[in-house]
Image (cartoon, rainbow, N blue to C red):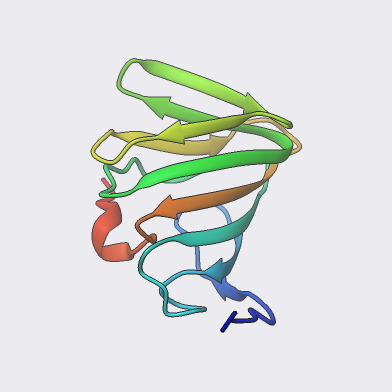
Length: 119
């Protein structure tokens, strides 16, 4: 039987500024460990600690621009673009532009504070 997700759960974020994370599917909102789906809204100038997660992350930028730093440099992912980061890769997400970013993040398996391994 299909499961309706009536609304997301607001999750506290890491980083230097408040960022809105609304989890629709994942450990907190749906008790799902296979995958997580969250709607993110990051203000301009936001940066979070680097991480070496145990999950793949698929990110689609809806508005603004998201910077993804990695060991070889960085990528700026604009609205209408997507980025995939693989489990075991060091990455750091930020929104250095004034407009920040709005994006959807899908993690396989689901995001967990125990498996993100922040710096």
